[in-house]
Length: 618
Image 1 (cartoon, rainbow, N blue to C red):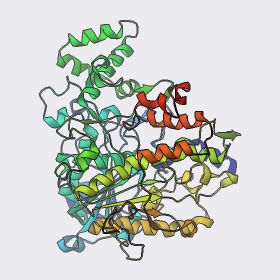
Image 2 (spheres, rainbow, N blue to C red):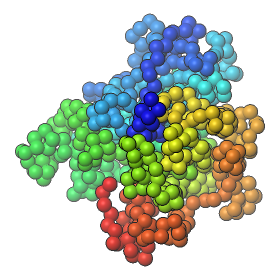
Image 3 (tube, helix red, strand yellow):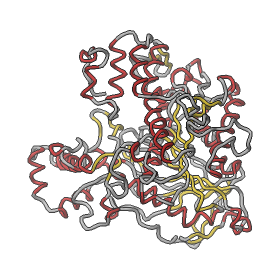
Image 4 (cartoon, rainbow, N blue to C red):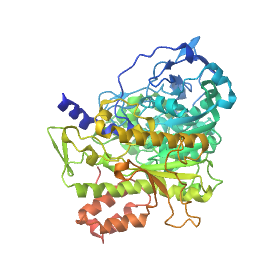
């Protein structure tokens, strides 16, 4: 039995950053105490595990199917039933099963549905009298799930505990993913609105969920004028994007980005053919692939392109909207990797999302939504993507993994993780501290005390890897087997203490816009970025380290990541004595499509020795 659990653990651990896998379906029973009235009609939920109230699977927009594919979301219609029973999660948005999203199904098959715009609400147990008292409205925290904007679902995140114990309202949402979420094509929405033409449909779904919250959350006891948008990975990415979106102005009042970053593609890159400076997966290039998939022996790519340019916009739009979800996703598959569809790019259309470099926009108070921000990353972010590398890890019996050289393994993970911190925290925090001083708080999550089932050193393989902070924020409400393998009696007390502290910081921020000492006022005071020293010198405190007492506890630190420090430290790192290893790190940075590490400069790294190790596709 133990061996089978470990097989499951090691086969599925790549999904950890999204809570790994769906829990067993639970049948919920409607509770009369949860009857509420919202704009769509009457709704009833159930009592949650922590004595809270919950309403799950609420539609917040009209299903974006048929002619509404690739259009801005529309307001949800009134409920069909006299009383809508919000007892079961809605469908995940269309995506490949077997990837990182935690959505079950045979790898390589399409799971979910285009009818997926649902959200869930978790609240403390409140009476009708409590809700009617406007002066007691609670802060609202809207969670945006991760998954590279191509997978994942809000139903995997249970906000019951943080709602019940920190006295806030938690909303977890879905949004369109992959090419159904971001797709800018000149033939679509020729006569549509600017929102329809933007191509940022997933972004607009998140905005639509915030509009739903603004209109309806008071019915659950929430304060529509005190909304915190928070998310992890792609959810943090999207949170940053809404800080730049004028369309989202006034819909949220605070933001938390957990392991998020942000980059935007131009409309030309997103839509044009490759010959016209478009991406290899631009919408028009994908249109060629779709035609080629329909008739693989009929014409060359150039022939298809010529035919398309001679077609009307209506003909092209009809063809695209006639494609099945599986056909559309299939056009984005990476070669030989049936569950590795291309990550979509957010599009700087100049209406939903602005033109320009995000860091420069954040430095100008007139170019972004001026809301307090918490931003952080995990110390070992990239280990989650490294532990299955056979060059670094030996695997026995299909599940027992042992790092070949721990020192080298740690070094190879360190620099991409530091780059993640630069992109996700330090670069933006420095910019935002100029435009809204004293309103930016940063953290680094360092917890790496996972259990070692059958001696497998998860703490060394993954450590404080990508997504490891999520259970601490939600209070370990996900009971999936894969998480339980990481927790035991030895780490229970310390991780529960760290989780409680983090939930108190997050909740106090939701209440006041300043995490300070946490909601219970018992924590280390969390200082804003660079403000502990009146002169704001380079050595002033910048971020809070989140860890247990055994590893130094919660404390402020000032180690800022710069591009120069990454390169200087890498070149001097004795853990990587070979030029090949150093070049592999530079290659990882370049292949991450980070504009700070252009491909043209790769061959000159390590005194030109990287020219001997050409960049190869993964």
